[in-house]
Length: 541
Image (tube, rainbow, N blue to C red):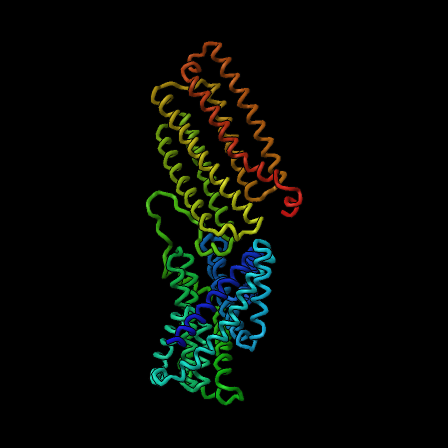
């Protein structure tokens, strides 16, 4: 019983070590890896090599699949090149499995020791995150040693030998058991290593071992599909394509397992090493052969998984991918993109408000509905960012985290102001049949157009951090305030001239001017966020 617990804990340590390596690397190089994938993803050979390289770095094909799936979900790249990258990731995982089976036990304590020193000493710096990755590598190497050590006494138990002796060569059954094995161990690498150990001790035949390895690859595809069950349609298509590729490879190779086993056993290599080599070459050949079929597979996945149906008229968050929370750079990009969607909704609200002041009372309901959408997106962004481990963020990421929260809050408050303005016009002007004067209406139109322009410029500054645009936005704020003052004086002059329409709508008109001034201030806050940063930080950007 104790030996079994040791094996399970070693497998858990392997999974956890892989997670730590992935999070450390992605927090330091997440943006760079994202650029590498996005630039190379259009050409199949480069996309394939990018999948191999990135997976070799982050120690996990799932970590490579994460940003690729996010690109597909956000319509930044097509499904076809994404599937090519996933095929490359499978090869990268197999190659790393071979590398990690070398005798690297002497590296494990070094990686853990220096990793702890750097991580505790400079936790939020790049060196600290690289220390985190070093700890993960040390845990992976240690876990591999423990898996092999714990598996040997288990395989020597008579009950286990009787159990595995039932695997007499039923190809489909053996492959299915290998898939279940990978799912239970939550790692195809662990399943392959244990299979190699069982082969070395003579518990299972070499042919059965090959079937288990093929099934373990299929199991990793099933795991990816299970992990993508909560994703949107685009994310599910990537996982489904990967699974179908693995299933296709499984069906193509299984009929020839007997021939492969006889041929491989003629090589002057022990059975344990042969199992590992078969795992590598099977994935390399499978993925290289299937790359040209990425486009037909993409069409099949689109046919099998339909686009997400829109439920009701309420706007839903689109970019807040929960699986990206372990990669702060990517998660912050997702949150920023969702904040830009709030800006798009606000522009629609301003357009609807313009129709309200021109005598279309039905548009007031549109403004209310759009404000509900703003509240939904703001709440989703707030809760999404709250799930991030803020104490682990770098200084730059922490500052961006605050900027996104502040921008989202300002836009949400702006939505409430526009909704109140629209309601006031509908109640105090349209319902009471009190029209604005021609001059007053033109002034409100001019201010509304300027608000839309400043909102667009504000979103651009928020996204790009361009200091020239930030200064232009700051100047626009001052010009808007001067225009508000001039229009306020003009309204008082109309009152002095006994303009009946101005007298009837005076309170409403001045209230709208004040609300528009507050709106403009909320939009222009992004300029000060950029301009108040230290000069060296702006230069870096």
